[in-house]
Image (cartoon, rainbow, N blue to C red; front, side, top):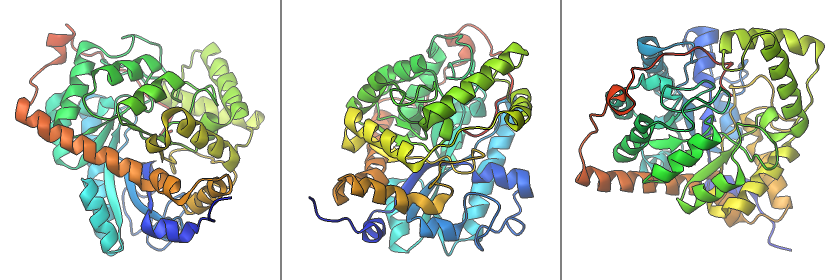
Length: 405
């Protein structure tokens, strides 16, 4: 029997870095980004996330998703993404006594010295750059530190996990996006992408990749989860899989119920990648089809599977709070991280293991991505590649998605 873990002391020294939270889109939807109306500093908000609950959860850093739906395309998607980045800045500035903007691993740890939570930004979906490497670099300059290559619908250069395959993974331009992300120091996020896109990105990547909010496909057969061969390749490249809490990704009964709904929607001509119509279908469907419940134990199983396959140095946490309607029993909001850590400690996880899970693995990946970028910038300048040159066509822009999960 190992030494008992003091979870409070653990979190004081190694606070949680969470890879993905959709509070900003909720702030847009609920209050048009007016944080006097959605006062996350006061607590008791109609969201999964506020600052008192983040403190109770032992959180030390949050990657805020600067997500926009894929129904927004072209310039509209870029503008909405910029508004999301602006909202992340406004949130951080409004609560500057508790939050501080961060873009590097060192800045995250500097935030902890002043007893503040680090605010970081990640863009959820390649549609946010509108097939422009210049726009990618501009987002990096604004502080965005990861890009999820797709959301729930394909981009013209990468296949999504929840859309009909078109590219068979990454196109030539998609590979150039990955290379330019490595050069700039923006982490490549493989959540939401198809397994073939995952494999293509891992093949071309020169720096560690992340999954900001995905779980293990061998445990729950969802296309949003990472297969074991991908987890192994991710680990060989030094990356991290931040296990998510989304019920349909961590519980097989929830995944089966979701597949049933997707099939029913498709039979009525509503594909899952068509976000607006699919979301409307889902709202009607669940009225007559009660959904199963996931549990904290389901998440424990996924965390342990990722550790077993990828290794203790390659697992993290990405809850996807405020990106889904329901969460597993025991993990209902951001205050719940100590319960998860206690459950893992009860299963024999040491303080060192849990420290890797909460933040040390993610900090290591951030530092490695930063170091690779410096090396690559000494070797090559900004890529001027265009999708029409590499793939031979201008993008045909596609429709929406069902939300932030």
